[in-house]
Length: 57
Image (cartoon, rainbow, N blue to C red; front, side, top):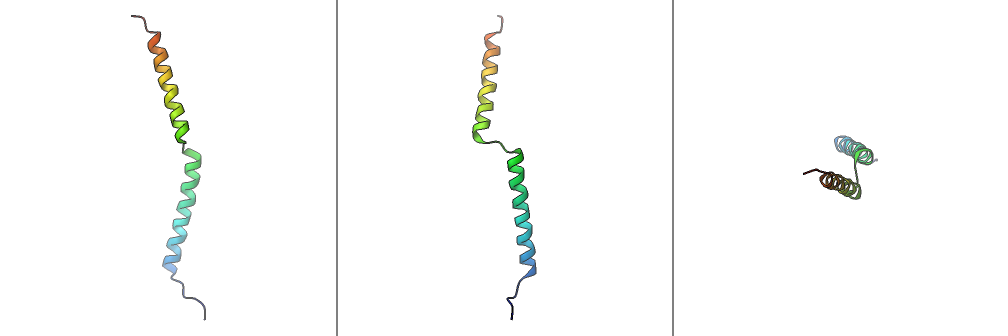
């Protein structure tokens, strides 16, 4: 005789796997690495400093 399978457990696992795949694609599409965030912050700081240096008193 075959193995008994709980269909609810199977369906829930399938849904979890699908959500995990969707999350992985969204992270790849929208996520930024720590290095990219740091680089963007450094660029913003450089622009602010540059603007402050050009200010006329």
